[in-house]
Length: 431
Ligand code: GLU
Image 1 (spheres, rainbow, N blue to C red):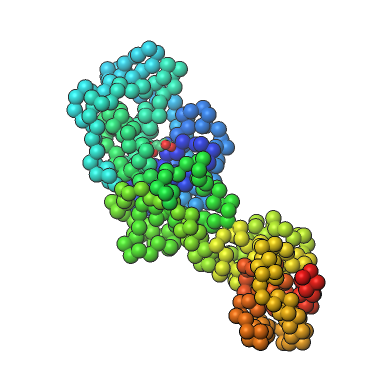
Image 2 (cartoon, rainbow, N blue to C red; image 1 turned 45 degrees about the vertical axis):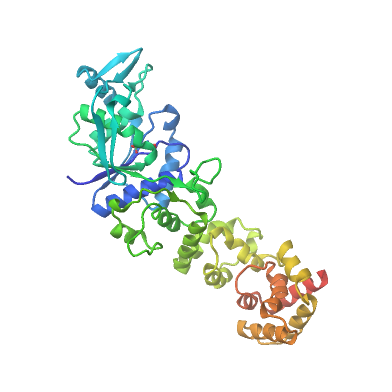
């Protein structure tokens, strides 16, 4: 029988990184074994069936590069089928009416268990399971019933999901068997995501929506790649790599039981790597929305000048959100003012005024290319017995505004002699 996996989110208004990881592992497994990936929205709660909540999920999956072969099915559209299944269970006398609700009759003896791909054999004593509700007194069916019926009807073979759902499995298994499922599903329960202090990721303490990371300038490739390493690692240890290579190496049996730490620093490294790996054209295209909201007057933006500096920026930024601050000096009328950079370079740094004067004098008639400009600053440093970085700092802050940014001399070459001199004078006066 060919593998059919499903991702079955209950819409909550955003896609939690843990959920996204579940979606991704299902998708990777389906692709790895040549199976089908089915998307099913578990929206039996009226509250959860609002279209915009569902659209949030679809949009985020698409952004991550997760495509589905079937669906999205909506559980809320299958009410008749669920009602029918309840009747079937009542007719077989494995379910009964109880104060308006319908409950499933759990056997008093024996155990219900399965061999979890990640966690190994798990068993529950039936005597510890209560007769659980499958249809509430208001006529709505519960998650357990809908989940079991849909997995049967959709021919699902494999469920990869968060370990918080382990307790639901015995009940769903009992239901599926009673409904005449052709066999048990293969279950794989993924380890929880925790933070660096091993605390569960929570909405209150952490940024948990995939969208939050997108909004902070993370690229989809990096987020998907990083999520793919949470609980699984490739045998050769190379973690940053295209999804196709992860699919080639992934084996569900290799997923670890230990909780996986969601580490923002590591994600940021992945992001910087992925930004560097983009073709420069693509990097430029991805910067567009960020540049559109940047602090300079729109008419001052010059795409050709940005394209010239882009490769230098691409090499060094960690997120797309950093890009505007790396290039604003090129499109603002004056160098931006950053108080802490100014303090550091101009006030606390050695000889700032003298360095600016020397640079101004030498820049006035030297050849205008990065190499010459670099030589000029090195000479100023040598003359004043300062490390080159101290000689650079006042010039950088005078012209580019910040201590952190693209390489100074290439930047000055692009800024041009006239504007460089003007900015050095302005800084000199301010000092
Ligand atoms: N709808 C469930 C949830 O979002 C997941 C169900 C499943 O994977 O079986 O928690």
